[in-house]
Image (cartoon, rainbow, N blue to C red; front, side, top):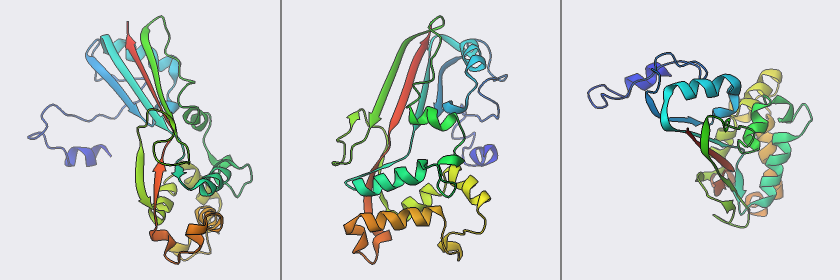
Length: 228
């Protein structure tokens, strides 16, 4: 990833941009009090917080800011039945569902909108949380401030869900269940969307249902804090 980023970001065009590989808990290439802003997108749920916050305190200038954002599983706006099916497959306890295959406690932290991450008030101030929880009555009907939405074809959404870490672990454990696009009889994502199609009349009655566009919004949590 570092090589790819460097190959597409030339020094001639972006002389002040560089890429390094390091853990969040140890950033040796940054000097003390050298940084104004630290951003983590869909990553903060994996950090080792007792080690993280002292390192961020070291590298940030006074009044420097941290901004952590995370999002959980999508909701299909205007498709409540499909959303319920996704929730069942994503968190059901059966081995053939995805619930047992999430890495914890990381997934639970994301589901809880990063509320479990608590910057120590001895070193951090102006701590703010900005959240959004979608509803299925229509676009932008949820509570809070929306950050992430997309119009997506159902077939594209299937490919997106196959990027989930829980799906990758499920596939490793169920090699005899290949997805249909690979010539198999179906995997957990195929089964999930079969159930969705059965549940949603507008999908069930459309022979080209995978080309149908749906509105999606993601539950999100943004954590902001300033170094004292």
